Image 1 (tube, rainbow, N blue to C red):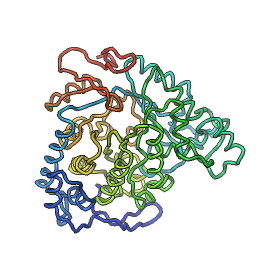
Image 2 (image 1 turned 90 degrees about the horizontal axis):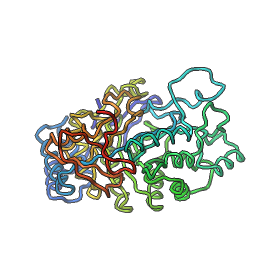
Image 3 (image 1 turned 90 degrees about the vertical axis):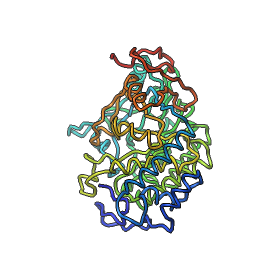
Image 4 (image 1 turned 120 degrees about the vertical axis):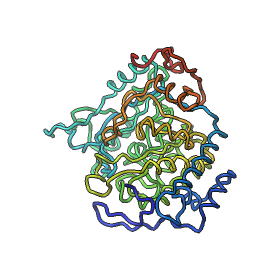
Length: 452
């Protein structure tokens, strides 16, 4: 299981002793009172609430319930009794990636995709034409958001100009190979975005890590990259690739990825060009409670500067089929109690982010519904297809119908609400025995997304 008081970790490259540990000069009682009064919490306050007190081992059940009650009350004060969800589909372009993150089983080594490589693999690369067909079919059925987060395929470039620069300047140190080296051509990021921009569907894509890949080998800043992506059809940015925004954790967990400062720089650039964004945390692996709260601090400060984050998404680590489990670095993820506290402290600490999401893909239905009583108010989307968590060992399915949502949300006494990606459009859905489907999309008329 995850160790919220972890002081060190032994990864494939050896031992790392953490400088950041959950030791505070605060008391749980003081932190709880500050949360109750709605005061802005410090990192020390957050650590006390997340651990239910650093003066005792384990999670204290009575203290945990006190934190959950305050977080649920705060949720009700800010967003009321509505639970929102969106009609969306995942369309991840490729699993080809050379980054080598220890938490990920979505990727396949990019070398396996090369034409000269004979070994079979279970990965995929979609052409822009294939992406367009997938999204067009989903829009015809009523969805209005497509979420696309992909591996860093060496042939994927921002646009034709980017490809020409990489080809002219040599590419040995920037993870680039021409599309001619591969069986399937992913095109460019801009081509993929234009392909997925069907009938005013909202395209949610291009994480900070993907934006870094889209500027590699150039002197372009992130604003230039995101401006070009926006012109190609990008509507909002997923604040994933965040994992834990503390570099001593990132250096072990995902040493091939950009650091915390560059992640923040990319997100600020997306905000500057007018792209809304989300933010996430992936917890329950090699980090401790101090790292989790420091991550929240990075997100809160980013929101203070931009006011651009529409929702925060706590993602509980699914470990079963990941390199971390394979190497024996972890033997489990976060406990149910840690999930509840992570959601609750996210609500209390992020006093400038209105919406906290519960991920049924990570938690399952029963546990995901519990998060809605711990401070969360959003319950993801229909997805239609989910590949990343499934390939890591997730077992909670790939699709939720509107009927599923209405039944589950009303069962806990809350109000089911269909929403747009940016939360500006909302439609309350009364509980009934009839069929129910989306109505906010360009071709949505209330017909169920799949046959019921």
